[in-house]
Amino acid sequence: MPQAEPGSKGNRMELDAASPWASLRSGFLEKLDSAQQVRIFDLSARMVPTLHRWAARYPLIRRVRVWPLALSVAAAAPFSSVEALVAEARVSLWVFTLDDLFDEERVPERELMRRAERYRAIVRGEAIQPAGDSLANALREIRAELATYPLFEALGSVWADAMCGTIDGMTREYYWRLSCRRDEDFQLPSYEDYVANGLYSIGGPPHIWAAIITVADPSAARCVEHLSRMEKLSSTCIRLANDLQSYAKEIEEEKFNSVSIISHQLQAEGKPADKAIKAAELRVREIIAEGVEQLAELQAAGRSDTGHPEAAVADIARFVCDFYVNHDYHTFYTEGATLRGTPKAAVAAKA
Image (cartoon, rainbow, N blue to C red; front, side, top):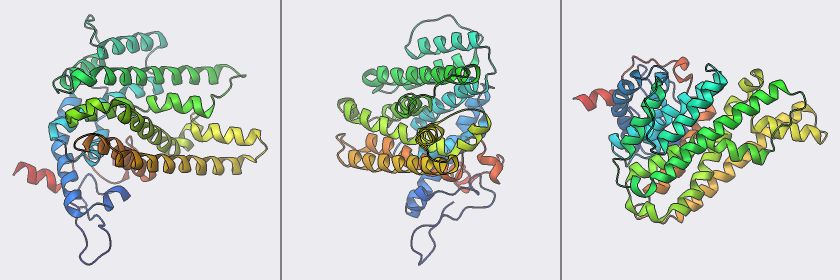
């Protein structure tokens, strides 16, 4: 559990060595007081058993992501109930798993596209025949759970559009990747086209609208335009932060992202490759910082009754962008923590 050091400036977290968060470095959390930190870690610990049991029913879902994702969701919306946070986290666990299917190309192209169309239909609430596809069953369950929240009636179609946008975004990236390998004359997309697609393929929009629905502030339904502006900014920041974190790995895998696109543009203008890469990384960091600043302004101008919807949208970007500086959601446990570790907050929750 985190504790503030007596007489110290700030709130440096002190975590038990056996905790799954023992290796965590989070500037976002260190800015909070110890009571807020405890609240977030406690919520996370309470979420994890339910998420593990749910994910265990769907073998494609990689449960190594449960702990860091639970922490992210709780950090962004510590005013929500455990049940609401679990519903929100399931959306992102599903999106991570779909990304694995597209990214790792474990499914033949024709079957992958058939599945993508099936998932779009499920998201829209269309009646389709059951299929031997565990992710389809998981998605049905996710949608059914979100539909139990009163705001789903007003915002369910917005969430569905966001999830379909994510499926479409992953599909487009999949074909970009194939074209890049097969076509010697393939032209990289522009930075603008890449980001317009990438803010969806990272899964930000469906996660954010699920958060807004489960936060359960009825006034969010009249703030859709304002929250949509925030959602686009938040998702863009998350996309770019992920690009910075994964750039070196993606170069090895012959993939491209915002860093390589900007670097390529700079090299075309005559800048040497090594300097172009550094300049591209700097520019992406600047864009993230500008986006986070704009999010703060939009949050301050919030129009909901509680301010919780705006906080959830802004703080998921703040937490995740900070998290990606030191970690990622796929290898967090290789950094020293253990899946068997149980935080003191979890023990306290059972007492």
